Length: 286
Image (cartoon, rainbow, N blue to C red; front, side):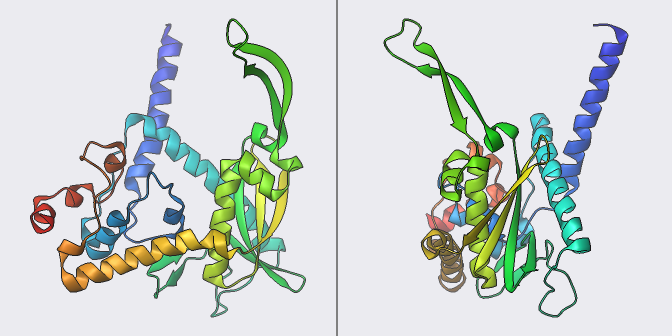
């Protein structure tokens, strides 16, 4: 490695550290946000959010690892897509104003006191006689347009694979139901938008899906779906119900721990890990 290559590597590490520092400087969330409801079943922990309700002052930021710079970069890039579209809506779209007519509904944070829940729709716009909630997502090129699967498994072949020319469908050529199966990003966007429709009491949502490679975009329109909403409504009720039980009947009512030890992968990312595994909780539960 010559001097310039070594210098370039040092600069790259320095730039990665900028992302890590940005992540460390952000304040941890001390409340339940609607985005948290989208966690997978394997990652969901009611106990975490109950402890956050009961002990907001003990919320901690999980330590960032050296490789976490990439996740911070991913989040920063996602914000760019949102800010671009929200700026366009602000200048040229018919953006709905907040209930007090003071602020445009562009990433505006709402609070539902009955559910003890925060949520922030990307946008709410008026088009014709209809109000639409807008959910913005960027996806990679292959998911957007599709691509050929050149190889597939075939047990009859010696090496296990055979060459094929099978085109994988992209979301741009798919119905919304198909797109949800083709793209995890679209699937989560549908869940998020559907939840927000119930929180805002709106009927329709726009899914604005942008190709990260060339800025082409696709629009889906969806109506709210009660069956799709029920599992997430249950999660909110479960958190608030258990919070109520602990407040009124003590820590012995606290929901069970999901992780087996503080070293579990999920525990290492948990803002309540130290409290969750503390002796004072163990003594009560025991």
